[in-house]
Image 1: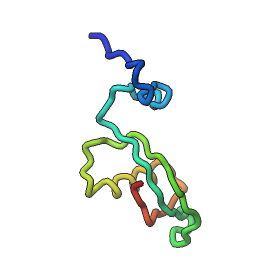
Image 2: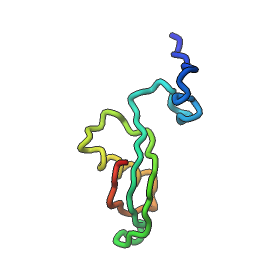
Image 3: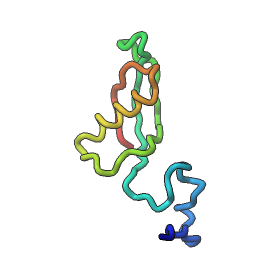
Image 4: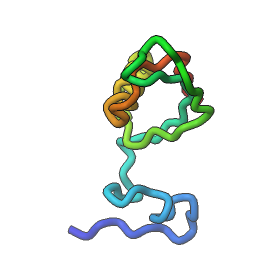
Length: 92
């Protein structure tokens, strides 16, 4: 079975904008922009930095909207083991 070809008339679906492990026609994964403050794992009560915007890639599209902030927070903490806690998480 042949895979669909990338449409040349849609530059916003360019392969260079997609992660290498995900084809351009995959629609069950989202990329979400977030903002938050975090602390280090060594001192979780001292919030030291604000992240004004970060793109969180490969979020499944079937996550319910009410659970999305918790899922994204867990994903960020899993991908960054030096972070202790997040607060003021906002989906942009």
